[in-house]
Image (cartoon, rainbow, N blue to C red):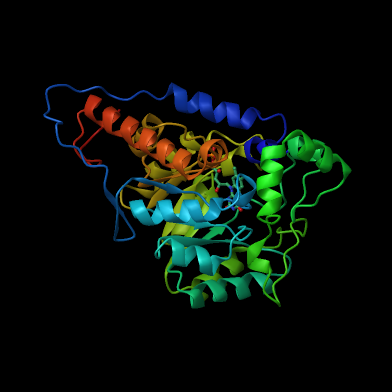
Length: 345
Ligand SMILES: Cc1cc2nc3c(=O)[nH]c(=O)nc-3n(C[C@H](O)[C@H](O)[C@H](O)COP(=O)(O)O)c2cc1C
């Protein structure tokens, strides 16, 4: 059930397949004899140094992958000085994650209901010390993911008869998770905060964005953008960055491949507008492809949770090192010493 929650995509999952095919079809330009003996994976994001051009996408209920997963990700963000997205529906409180990540956390906001709770949560994040707010706009209604529906997966996480059967078949996960306490929607444990995953998120408008822009003095990112006209309107509305993403193909099955939309949005907004990318990144070469297509910064999603589920914090570190090594080698092959070294394709 938990694997299918993390891995599942919308509908018959053709969107996810289309994006991997599009990523696969991109080729990099091999270059020779350019002294690439010293290479740096470092970059800057919102004026802050990051030791990698990739960070951690916001994901709800990570502690389902393994107990303590949120804080493993927070320590990773602190070690590598990269941004960590903290979901509205995170399984550890936004305050705790900000502390453990040593300030490298960005708060991800979902609009919900009439918006009252949403703005309250944004104010709480501001008070906690968050500098970057990521508004996710591609979930006006939660997408239908057949794998979740089949298991009766619910958030807050509930254990009924069919879940009990699943738990019995996976004793290691069950004992570990149940001993450490059932994962909760931690930002809603405080009195006065309430979240219903099934409540419609459909009532957000461009006015909502304007209100948020007025409220939020720091960096405002809008995540889940796949349309050139929307991207133009967002730039005009004064957002600080756009995150091109199909939510890992978890919402609408029939989106265009987000990696293709990244190229189109970059062409429209010009070379200087900050563009981030996530969805379908599986290797260091994929990271380099997204940079070649026009992303300034990349976010990794479900693969981080798989690494944690497979081998805990050590597994997460190994995956991170593997992606870093793949990126570094791909940079050597394409003649890049730095990530800003020139044309890659
Ligand atoms: C299990 C899971 C939970 C997620 N929860 C959220 C969330 O709460 N908020 C959000 O903006 N995106 C969420 N996402 C989407 C990610 O931020 C990101 O867009 C996506 O995972 C990238 O695709 P990838 O997993 O193929 O790398 C979630 C993704 C996964 C896999």
